[in-house]
Image 1 (cartoon, helix red, strand yellow):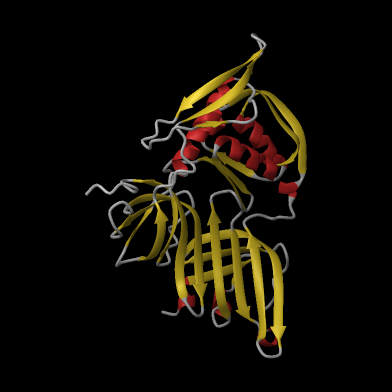
Image 2: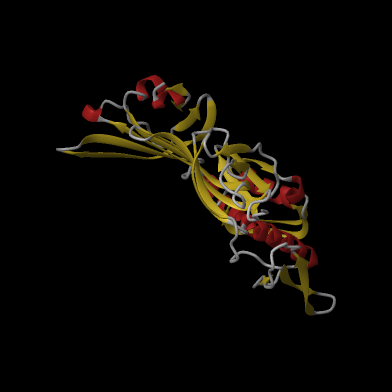
Length: 332
């Protein structure tokens, strides 16, 4: 089977796969953990201008073996040519419309409301539906505000504060709690579908023993400190001290739990390349085996890149964090 037969692409709902395959030079889909939007890039042989250039803002989807791995809009089209090398056309798409109201500033507030109520209103103002993790959505505060922040910036701010994943896909927004195993995982074994790996399962830089946050006790008119024990099995001694004061004790506890999840996530890092697998998703777990004791185990996939290339074929590249399942321990 030709490497191109795995891929299918539709623009504005029209499947262009049959016409695309003879011209396709490379295609890449990147699924990230929320720190940046998903992307799709396609490069085709455009000799004689034979490929119909899509309009900016056109809807586009990509699938691998019938499994959809990207949904978004065309963001940029670039033509390149030279006398000796011919012509190519490159199409770049984003997971959401970068020209739309997601980047338009909003100014409103909510009193005594949950995060789901507050962020849900911001989502509707920007034309998005919102799916939020129940634990995050139930956070109640006496005051929430969007101070001339876009929905995109608001989600990114909350993502950093709560160590969550904020993603925009099409007209859908998601705020998910990191560290939950809500997505189906995958497995890879050396000698079967694991092509290569480069993993450091022990990384001390991101490990802390506890987290500390200051908050203002208005009744006492003084600052108090809330400490969260991370319960790390690693010999950590340092505390992750939040630089700026938070609003109250409840927010201090929420921030402490978020920093605990962050410490667990940053305990190790690495990368791996596997045979192309459309089931791989950012924030899901991968179980590695057949490498060596201390490396075999589970890892959190934080970036997933599916690639197809005329020269090298198909593969899925993974950025990994949060070792578990025995990773980092040589028990022999």
